[in-house]
Length: 115
Picture 1 (cartoon, helix red, strand yellow):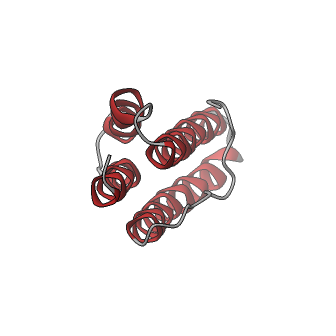
Picture 2: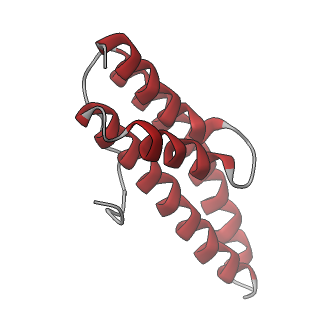
């Protein structure tokens, strides 16, 4: 696979995170990883990185929802939701920019669920 196509696919997998839809942030890097991951080690690594980050954020959001059901948890959960949304947006953009330049990007607070 040519280098420009690899970069474009890696960028797409990272930018999937900024789409404000329930499952698309997880589905987009998953589709890139499954369809093109075997053809390019760079795409494979970056799509898995983006997918792991989106799954990690989904787990963090679920934990926040559990906090909502406690009196003390409502303000904490609200603040956490805002922080996770902002973090998702900026980390996805940074990941897309770095991969467009050909370097790898590792997300912060990323659970390595898919290896």
